[in-house]
Length: 133
Image (tube, rainbow, N blue to C red; front, top):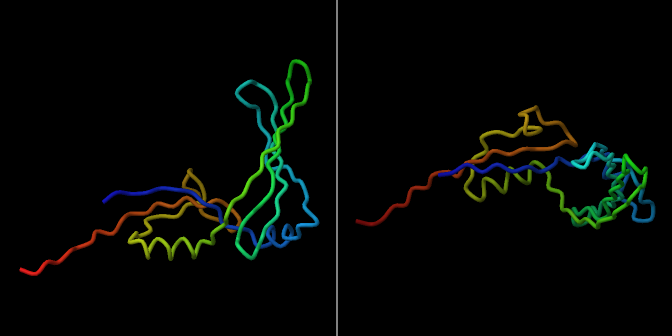
């Protein structure tokens, strides 16, 4: 009887609505940080939300600026994700014999918010098998 921990995200309805037109895909800055080489790196997303099959299709763009030379490198990677609403995970967990112990908004155990991350802590429900004696 183990415990499973995984994370998903709670989709933002506003963000989905703003990005569900395949003819108008906008690039946006997702995050920036200093990587392990000491260079500044920015990650951009250019995605389209396909509401019919709950999939996100698009590209993640990685820009890295070498702090010594100032040279910019750019890598682009395709991405396809399926989003799942919180209520769907709750139902799937129950149908698969799990009980939900906790749902956090991050690995720091913060409170979940709409449009944010969800960290799930589930435990398999102990099943009792009866035999005819």
